[in-house]
Length: 474
Image 1 (cartoon, one colour):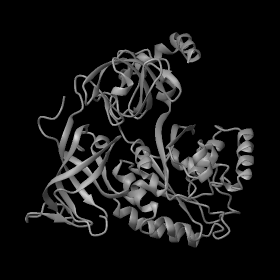
Image 2 (image 1 turned 180 degrees about the vertical axis):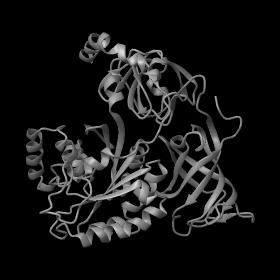
Image 3 (image 1 turned 180 degrees about the horizontal axis):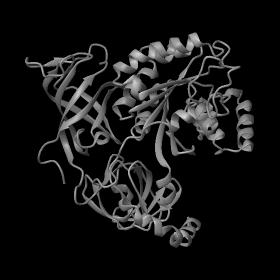
Image 4 (image 1 turned 60 degrees about the horizontal axis):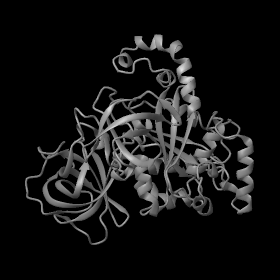
């Protein structure tokens, strides 16, 4: 890291001048921040690739990195040879995203892979979420950090159907993505070059017509927030440049890079109270925590709290991607080196929080839930137990009381007392957890107030926090 620090100090006088004019940054204690020049120019977005296990997420991610110059030909040739040796020829692009041995042998992405690329206007971080059923919790941690989702669907005969039918991952991922706050979706119909498809408009239209009602029922405004486009991840067609009319005469829309570039970005508050849920931690010359800033800004030298254990800490260094920065704002994925706390005293799900307005820490809360699909013969009633996933928190929970059922048509509470509900119901209830968790009301901080409930590896409900007990909070 010594290298970057040196460069920073040299470039400081040159870039400090114009920065002060930028009121927002000038207001901060670290006004003359040199390294933000670049990030101010380009917005930053987290993209999560979701979809069924064989839809081609890693391959598409790998191809993007190759096309945007993040991976050179030599590396690709090495991967091609490796894939051939394992007689998995079409997987070589995926190797760029799948870096550990378990993933290459299985051809599945387990950890949420991470990689950066840039287009004309935007810096992107790709979060490659696993698609296999037993890996859905990893997908949750990936999607909870994402701003936009790229839903990869295989057009190959039989593969779209498998992913889409009940029990297929396409459905579950879309519902999860929506709950986890992925408000914009690019639906990428992949493998259009496959011999069973041959860039057929009929097949593309069939997939679109089946997906649209389902996306609507998952809460997406299809006209405003969803865009469909055809690609081939393996050969890179319609990704960086528009598809050739000779290959696909009927497509007049954008290519993938153009579509990504034009996505409207959600607004976050750089002046709000600081909130960074911790997704990972390790020791490196102090305690280092990783996470995405959901609100507020952080500067080297800041005093913050680690919640829920109210540990006061000092910020020693901030790293954005691989670079050391003096200050970082909302939406950035950071590694933050802290003093004042041991690594073993932090768990994922803890939140790095401002001292003046710390995040509430609670053991129970009120929520509005939508029941998606309960396990066979299960009824949802007081005493129901599940696993709660909210930002980076994973905790066992129990429903202590059903307060009221909401009429899906009028969105108003129904009069009759509710003792149990079935699939599809919307219900307000009280939820309890065993240990303190850091959450916010959905109306205050959507990203820290929406959650999923899972039982036996299956998402049974999605919800939002509507109320916290008044004594919650630091």
